[in-house]
Length: 132
Image (tube, rainbow, N blue to C red):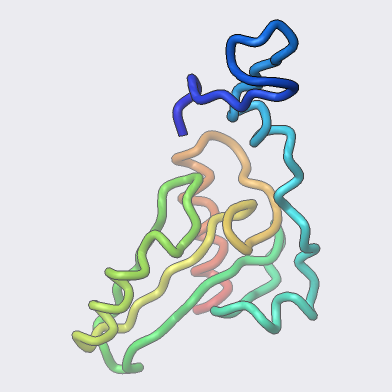
């Protein structure tokens, strides 16, 4: 959504009483997070959850148990759903595929620590150590 897009309130664009509000400000001020991620909500969501020292990690592991493992790691601010087409194609091709949400992203709770690259590595290291 472009920053220049405006919503006009109180009249039409050009009217003396009209006030233009950038859409980005409306989005930033909106409360889009309505659900509390608790056990009851998590039961209805796709994927699995594991409690780790830094928070609850949301992940999905699919494909044959004897398939070669592929780990899909999303960018720092993206949920694991960015991998949907790739995840489906790899599992259908016989790979064992793991994808997860970083702490504080998607359906994972908790907070990333440090810089983005080190936080991403740290999130995976904590998760992988727990799952092995």
